[in-house]
Image 1 (cartoon, helix red, strand yellow):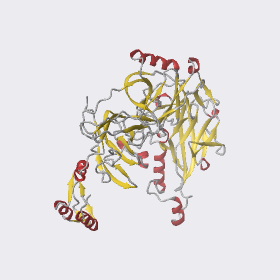
Image 2 (tube, rainbow, N blue to C red; image 1 turned 120 degrees about the vertical axis):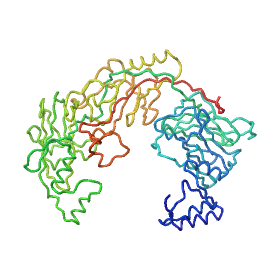
Image 3 (cartoon, rainbow, N blue to C red; image 1 turned 180 degrees about the horizontal axis):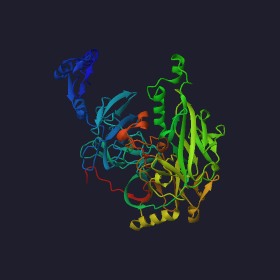
Image 4 (spheres, one colour; image 1 turned 90 degrees about the horizontal axis):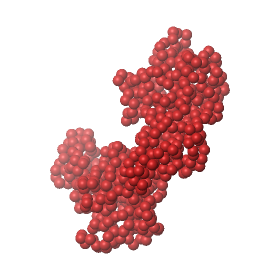
Length: 609
């Protein structure tokens, strides 16, 4: 804080005079009412407030409040883990602790959790006054109807608000874990049941915890951005049911699942047309340029307002500025593309506001009234194109429209059963691949595709990987595991034979390439965050639905670096070192598929042994 209002400072002085505690995280403000002043520094120097660095805030608050941490997370060597943030709430007969790993890249194993819970149903010391934990977050407690809430304020950048699959498998049936009897600390014999809750599936497991004085102690693991929810039931409350024991699993071995794989596209493939020669009215044709850059150049030449975040809304211009939407010029575009293999089946052109366009393909007009519904979003209207309109070799799509302040020039999209090969900025339509390898699909005929791909991993391939893992250990559990790169993954086990796996045929007259779908399907399992894995039997084939993003369809398509912290209109019109004339695409596709063998982890005792 740089400046503070004088009435706020007076309130803080009155608060401190009444016995309150004021803490400045960092330096005291050097300005009052935006004017230089030593008043705040004098307030702190006079002992009415304390100053500390932000990183020291939790420990200073604990010191001032005279209480210890409500919950803490410690590494294998007993060191505090500031990257684990927590929230603790007290309800009727229960303490609920939600902990999250704020590191999106790295997981943590053998983390010791220490939770201070009520003794014999009584409140913990300092309850209702707050506390701190994990040396990285501060909890301010509040009382309401005999309950207290401690909310962790996450220091630093927050991880995605996502849950992480619970890496605890169902073990043998067991009652809720109970604390030990009186120990050396003299805390007394107190029972408490600790449960791990999986908020994605609704499953609950009994956690093996021990009592150390006023604390319950147990061990857990955190994937990157991983969440853990623990619920501690007071000893006087009888658990509702007998729960299976939580079993921590550790990776023991991996066996890759090798392609190529049969596959199915959820929707037609797409070829983005974002580069065209252009002219205004009957002027000379100008060199090929990106559509959005053409829009900027033409608007500047015609004196039209540029499209940007600060642009005046069209309705306001018409109503109050008396601007006419008719002023402008006729803009013509010529999109060139190659065809190596003529597409089979239905072919479409997707465009925004096709009713405002005149379109010709290889000199033949396209009927803009022959619409066929919409694609992805209602704004993208599909126009039917007779496949015979295309020809092997060079093709030319000509589009013209009246460019004025209210017309937005946008890319066009060819849709159909074809593959796309990029030669620099030149797209070529070719045949879809019969099978896909694991890894990026951009170089496999799908550079602009943004839908889902259902990969089929044969029973024989799964059995081969499973047998390799079982050679090392016949026990343990098998998981299908994947690398990063999908918006979401849906996995189901499929009973099918090698012949069905090998078949791939065209559906709906060749609209999409699809793998044969025979056999019974098990329940689907969805994965959207770390760890990208699901338990499998290892006996059946797998259907892996890999959901891509629309980034390679709608862009930005020419930005460097490819990924940036945020996206705004300027990301679609980068320049200099931030611009690539060739397409700069986000890698996408089935990543690093493998079977993973997991064995029960050896829990570390609270003292580190």
